[in-house]
Length: 154
View 1 (cartoon, rainbow, N blue to C red):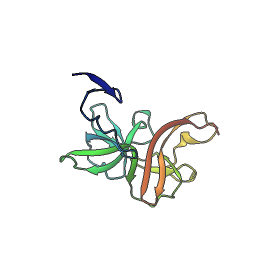
View 2: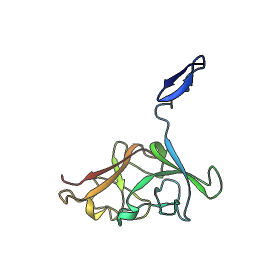
View 3: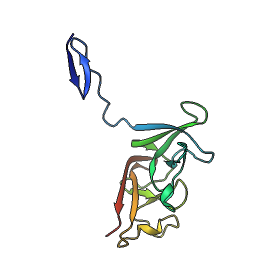
């Protein structure tokens, strides 16, 4: 039987190729979580592999892996984290606004809201330091997660 390739994977001839992922389907991770992590929180992976609330106040906690979309799923003590794609969050968010990682655990901040007490100090334009874009609000309670680290040089 001949072997061909579809999307980089071997497929036996005569069989249907595998179905590619549906565009817009979120990429998710499943992790054991730390008490206090909640739905809609920005999460990072700790050294022990568990998920906890990310925040911009320290380098170790400022590398988010995504936004929590489910708690105690698929099993008790585990959570689902959307790394890319749409996720429901507690709003209200401003549709079309870019949201960054805040300086308080798990918090999102509108990138233009520089007077917000959770706005990261290092995100001041012209500082030359980095900040983390978490995503763009699609609606008052929906965020399109698209993690990006950028330099605040504006």
